[in-house]
Amino acid sequence: MMYKFNEKVSVKALADLRESVGWNRMEKEYKNPLMTSYYHIAVYENDKLIGYIDSVSNGVSDAYIQDLMVCPDYQGKGIGTGLMDKMIEYLKKKRIYMISVVYEECLKSFYERFGFYNMLCGQMETY
Picture 1 (cartoon, rainbow, N blue to C red):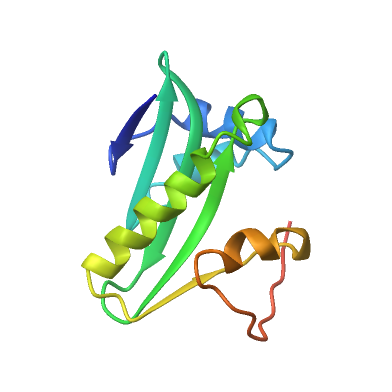
Picture 2: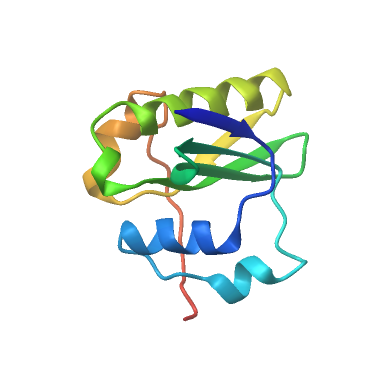
């Protein structure tokens, strides 16, 4: 496996990975030049994108971790944990004060292992 840090990732590879985990492809959104990332990490095996994590941040006080994905064929092998560890390490090194993540209830124990705790929030999907 090869980790790539903040390097360009193919829109098709991202869309394929999103689809493999049951999410919408969002190809149009990923092609939009306004779609930017603060920091992201991609994991490849034999040039195939098998894992990805992204963050959005103002660079000072807050960061939001989003799009943690691991191809189903590779889940349960520590890739998601490794991506989270590397992302949190980077954000802490940059002295980001608060890190947030939105997750489904079934993933609560996974995120608690990294020190996340529940806070009230709201979310709306528009399409």
